[in-house]
Amino acid sequence: MSFIKSHFPYGMALLIGAVVFAAQSSSAIGPDDIQSYQAPAEPAGEKNNDQLFPQEPKGAINLRQALSLALMRNHSLRAFAWEIRAREANTLQAGLLPNPTASALIENAQGTDSYNDYNRAETTLSLSQLIELGGKRSKRAKVAKFETALAGWDYKTARIDTFAEVTKSFIDALTAQEQLALAKKLVQLAQKALNTATVRVAAGKAPPIDQTKAKVEFSISQIRLRKARARVTAAYKKLAELWGSARPVFEKVDGSLDVVETIPQVEQLVKLIGRNPEIARWDEQLDKYRAAVQLERAGQIPDLTLEGGVRQLRETQDTALVMGFSIPIQIFNRNQGALREARFNLTRAREQRQATISRIRSTLAQSYQELSSGNSAALALRDDVLPGAQLAFDTANVGYREGKFSFLEVLDAQRVLFEVKSEFINTLSAYHKAVADVERLIAGGINLSSMNGEK
Image (cartoon, rainbow, N blue to C red; front, side):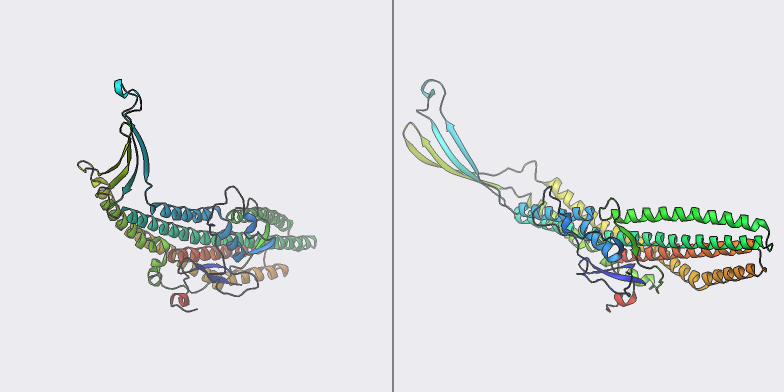
């Protein structure tokens, strides 16, 4: 039982710390091991295809199953997938030629005197075509193509967000589950202590107050047990909601928290933030704004409209061709405002890129502090505090049966032991969630072998 480095793709490999499944050793989830939702080429309308996706298992659920459910069924993630399809359609539309325009015109008819009928009417049928100059169509399609790529980055970001969120919710559920197991053990020990106190009081070896204290402690343990059950129910429900389930079908989560690994130096992790899609996207984001500048610059070139047709002169029964063109005279509007806006947007984007890098670097530093402190605390609790508390409880328990310690000392040792165990579970939970946070920020695993490119 251990924590794994879950391997998950976002273009480059993504490794996120996750709870290992029962009966499995620490291993990696490959890029093709967990399928994400991909929007089909055509919308399904109101039809619900959820039956085609993974179904929630009954009984125990492991992390891999939870991730599979969320990555296929999470509605927010699926919305991002459909946004990509919408952008692809917009790219198609942006590259289309403008349609020709057909027109019909009747002149010199239904007037006065000699023009009161159609005998002198002139009928003109024509076609006109807008010719976009300056490469507007290709530049417009280029901008749309970058917007499609950016929608893909949004999806990748949402995908690793969902991956990390499911991981942390799974950890919360596992934490609540282990706290429940601890609460059950506390009830058992409290019952055992009550039985021991009752026997000693009946034998006259202990005062009646010991039995009263034992009953109070037993009642408190039962209250804690009810609260622990409620927390498990809430954690299960929160986890199931991540794949759109109103109520969980599974009955327990399968995994273990009890592993603490060596963490690298923060300087090694800072070098990896470029893999984060929130940063990696900015190359194409800036390219999109540069393309927008080129598009608006092309907008300063007026478009040409060509027109041609045929005219029938009713009076002479003659037919003639009609030809012409039109072009805007750019006296007032030379698209100068839109061009300036595009340039300002490009400059703003450069600043936003640096702001994003600074924000992620700052968040990483904060998350690393939580990871480091959690790592130290978990090791201290596991190696020093917990063994000491266990020894104190065992000694007090044996000593009470032999009449060497008071029942109050036994209760105090028992309380300390279970507080330490509860704190150890919470510390492990915080540590593993900090691992998930850090790995989300660097879009990869924090284990040194993965950073060195080793498998």
